[in-house]
Image 1 (cartoon, rainbow, N blue to C red):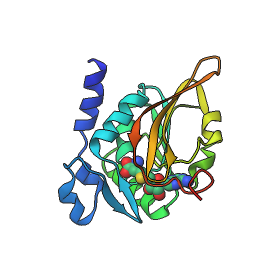
Image 2 (cartoon, protein in one colour):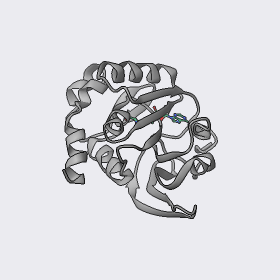
Image 3 (cartoon, rainbow, N blue to C red):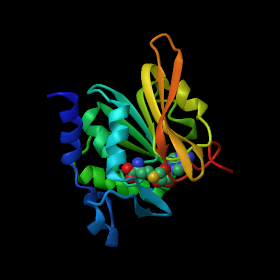
Image 4 (cartoon, rainbow, N blue to C red):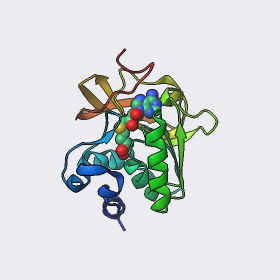
Length: 195
Ligand code: SAH
């Protein structure tokens, strides 16, 4: 199976409706961001797929996601990587996501409640890191927790418009960054937010 198939097959095996509640459930197939409660949103499916492809997780990778939200992105990553650790600051969202992931049989996702600004020092390093909330600048701890040869993807910029940034750390520890395209995410709350 080539890589394109690997990502698409994982994506198609998920039903976005399983990650939504209430009236928006019926809009699950539309390619729009949708509300998940507490002022937060789930991204449009095309962006979830794009970010997953850009992150390029491999089967044995240890992945960190900041911003569990509904758990949809974590469920997708879980099919493509070894272990996924995901952090969410809103306990109710984390609990709901965790229950969904368990119901769907995603056994390799660990949900953490807390501020993702510091990453997860006890679990680092991570081969892949994905941030799904908009930061004003790069969270230093996350860069430190990225393994040599690893890749991180995150929206960085202003409150209502960010660059989707790809950060590569070479095996000898050099860091290369490039911006892929413009995106709009909800705010990364805390030290790396917009104050
Ligand atoms: N990946 C999610 C969508 C994330 S929306 C999905 O697939 O549904 C962004 C999430 O980031 C929100 O749930 C928000 O509460 C969370 N968030 C924002 N700032 C955070 C922080 N500092 N630490 C952890 N989570 C944070």
